[in-house]
Image 1 (cartoon, one colour):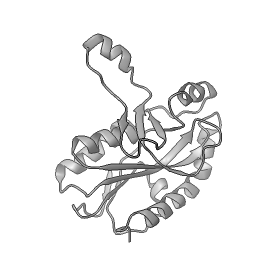
Image 2 (cartoon, one colour; image 1 turned 60 degrees about the horizontal axis):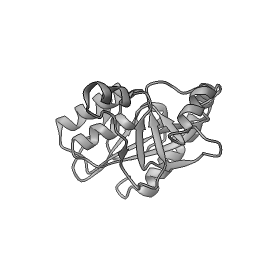
Image 3 (cartoon, one colour; image 1 turned 90 degrees about the vertical axis):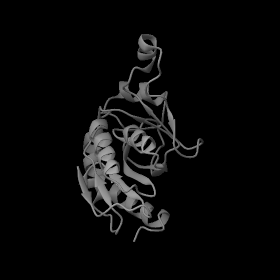
Length: 194
């Protein structure tokens, strides 16, 4: 976890998993690098928010795999789900629902599936494509941490790969282009960016 800058209640907090995704950000806004995966994301953001002050909102900028053909570019997520939590079994065991889908933006916006595994197989891609067009490793955890702290959140994802056998190579080759696109999105969509 690395926090660059100071959080204040009149500005958003930009949250990204790794430096590679943040390499083109040119801003006075605070930036939190969490590390990859749900545990790193949730604990880093929860710790930053617990220290206070709270930001005006959390804006997660990051890469995502495309689970369906034709998905590319930058997307503001409407709903986020966990793809690696067996909510049905947990509900059967306890009677409680864990990991319900979270609507965090326009309900007509795309759904993002979050899980700790880097999706890089046709079988996993096909299974997950039934639930969402995009997949990442941090979105659900960040949304949960922000919402529990009563802070609004936006998840903004740029497609880096096709979540198939070539995903790891594609991510490495495209992360700089994705980082540039995310920085451009922030510059155009966050009035306090500079």
